[in-house]
Amino acid sequence: MTRIVTSGKGQVFSLDVLFSLLPVMMIIGAGLQYLYLAEEQSTALIEGARLETLAQAMAENVAAQDGKYVRTENCSELNTTLSSAAQDFLPDGYVYHVQAYSYYDYGNPDVGPPSTRLCNGSDDELWSSDLESNSFIQTNNAASSDLRFMLEYNATSGNLTPGHIAGVSFTIWKNN
Amino acid sequence: MEKQLNRKGFAALLDGILAYTVAFACIGAVALLMTNTREASIKTSYTLNVWAEDLADAIGQSMVNPTNPPVSYATDWLDTTSPEIKAALVQSLTNIAADKRVSITAEIGATNLATIGNLSQASEVATATRLLRHAEVSTTTDPVSGVTTTTYTLNGDVSVLTVKIGI
Amino acid sequence: MKKKGYAYSLFVFLVFVSVFIIVVTNVKSVSVMQESNYERVTIMKASELGKNIEYLLAKGVDCGKIQIALSELNLPFKAGCGAPSTVCVESISGNYTYGDPTVCP
Image 1 (cartoon, rainbow over the protein chains, first blue to last red):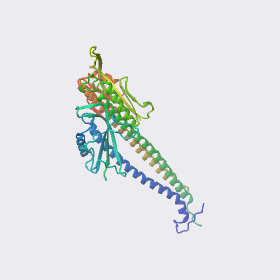
Image 2 (tube, chains in turn purple, orange, yellow):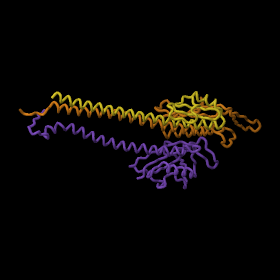
Image 3 (cartoon, rainbow over the protein chains, first blue to last red):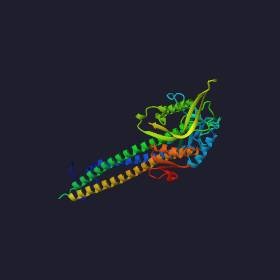
Image 4 (cartoon, rainbow over the protein chains, first blue to last red):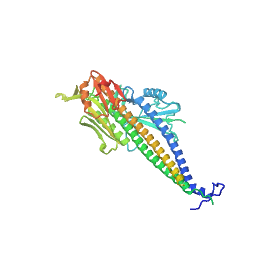
């Protein structure tokens, strides 16, 4: 190793000292980068957890109604429940989108999405008022969704449809 | 005499900083790994349990009177129902299991209602329990018209519905 | 010179120990968070079964038969009923109780 020699003037920034300190600087630099990444990750984690809680709260609000069921059509009742739940739970800027589909009339699960969408009528708006029905989730946003199972409800007979289980999916994200 | 930098002290400082950085990184990595795996596991457990409870409610509410000819579904949470409704339940559960890649088992007492997939191969299983009212089913056939009539009576006993979902 | 080296090493050792203690205590608080998460699952399951028992009692099922059925189950919480129509569900830790606690086993 080079012999480090100092003159009486207290020379610090000699080449030898800098050379010796290089690995230390690299480690500190890498450590700082890692800390920055960890902070970014934890911010995303916290926002993700928040979205998850909102989605679960909204789903539970609907599922805890008297009789866990979802209508097959004319779902203005579900629309009203969702709007009031959004007013109670969702802070400003957060939007929701809900989809209901039958797991009884499922078509071929190996081929594609469920074939029978419930609550798909012209006046069934299961999404926030400032969303178009076919809007897509911005890819730079995080979104959270919660899926619940309920029975289908036949409004014509005024009764549950036993054996017909439906899935209702609640999605929440922040509208930028 | 020339002053020399105190090599021993300086080298010791470098060694110390290096050792500290390595130790910090190791502890951080271990702590991070420990929390990450447990966090993912509890979320899976919560979702599976919610689904199991939802399915138990859906099945319980579907267990309506098995009378033939059918009457309107005035009562529910029985421990038996008509074969058509049982078949519809099995179909719904089969589609759910295929879509969500889970295995599902539903039993009423010792009687199997639906078994989809192999639950013993699941790494995580959630169980939901409900109580159902026991119905004594009796079938009579009218010899003249050949019409089969199914009726049921409640004797106050309670059966247990167990729904297991595994991933 | 030896003393200077000793001082540096001691300083580094103390820093290491303090970091270790901080991390260990933080990990413990994470495990406390996990405990409360497990509790959340148990509370959800307990309240669902509580609703079920309430419904059965309202339909006129005998409480004794319900208790027999419950005693054979391996539930992660306590559940019971009392004549004529009181229900109790309680988490093992006692943090969550619904209904009349005296009726729980």
